[in-house]
Amino acid sequence: MRHKILTAACLTAGLALVTGCSAASTADSASGGSTLTYLTFETPSLTASFWDASIANAQKTVPGLTVKKLVSPDTDRDAYAKQLQASGQFPDLLQSITPSTFATAGLLKPYDQSWVDANFLLPQGNAYKGKVYIPPTNSQIIPEVFYNKKLFAKAGITSAPKTWSDFMADCAKLKKAGVTPVELGGGDPFSASMPLVGVLSADVLGKDPHWLQERYAGKVHFTDPNVETAVAKYRTMVKNGYFEDGALGVKYADSITNFTSGKTAMYMMGSWFLGSVPKDHADDFGAFLTPTDDGSTVVPFAVGGSMAISAKTKDQEKATAFAQAWSVDPANLKTLIEGDGAFPMLKGKTLADYNVNVTQVFRDSYAYVTNQNSKVSAIGWATNDDAMPSGLNDAFYAASQALFTSDDIHGQLAKLDAAWDAATK
Image (cartoon, rainbow, N blue to C red; front, top):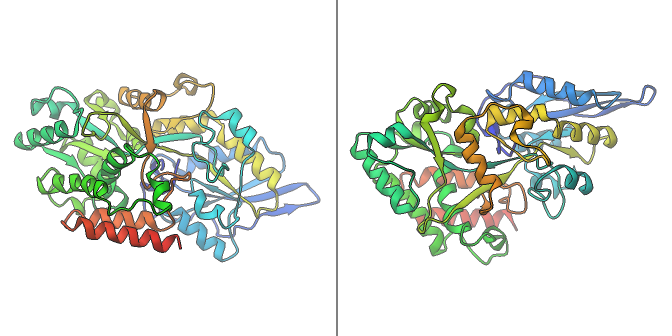
């Protein structure tokens, strides 16, 4: 899980706070018991009952521990955790936050590296400055391009495109056949950004995997010609009418319905969408990666994780034991796999070990994770050293929405450069 994803964490807004806000851990010295607070979130897949059951299971492994659940009132858990911290109520445990936002302030405790090495396929997958603050339990591809095979056939398209020119030709065929080529939930900022995440990850990071680190060093910029060329691809899609009319007004939840009901042929979205593929006609759907000019495979990859541990908690031992137990519980991964499209990253396990029922498009997508290929950080979604500075994701989302109606590519990217420079002073 991640960020606002790295699983479907960013999928549902307006969540109600279901417990009190007090986030101070307590310890009962007489009984040896402790009460810790745990910041979580809820989505249609990760429901209140899921969190309650997963907490209860992990709690059983830590005698004398009581865990109180806090639910973020909106999709921005980082912002909510900051509010709690400012009022002296920073949680003891925090689910799927962005580590760099808090580790630099000394608020998080890193996990023991030997435990991480022993349990996960990519131990350093989401490490920040060499330390692991959230266990790398799962991963996502952000985005994939999901497609409706029946609508492709209606337009005379027999296979998924390999190159960008193939992709554009297929979009033209679909439009000519009276089919909206690409769904865009432009009414929600993160959803509006998916085409840009795709082209920038493929064209910019695909050619220079260290681009984000070079941006921190001031060696590259968003206004560089190669970045502007990639963004121009998105503008071409807009100007050619490859998105539905009024796409900026389509909410994320409606974009899922539009695509799964056959109103549009393709959907650029994080692999968490796999949890929304209709089970009764799952074979109608396939997936491919954002095509590159030369047809090379570039996987925009993000390693997610479970919970961070507060460096300020009064019972580090029990907090760590609970976090470790929760993070390697196969039952939690089963829910994330089936409902959230998460790709499991525990060592020594296959999909069969989780007793999951997944679609063929899930298996095909998971192959991108397990196969040898070019994996790069999905821009804007990494939780490791490639994470963008605090506040830049919002600026990136705003640029994505603005570029739907504006040809001023240079101007919008200059704003991103200015925001980056201001955030890293």
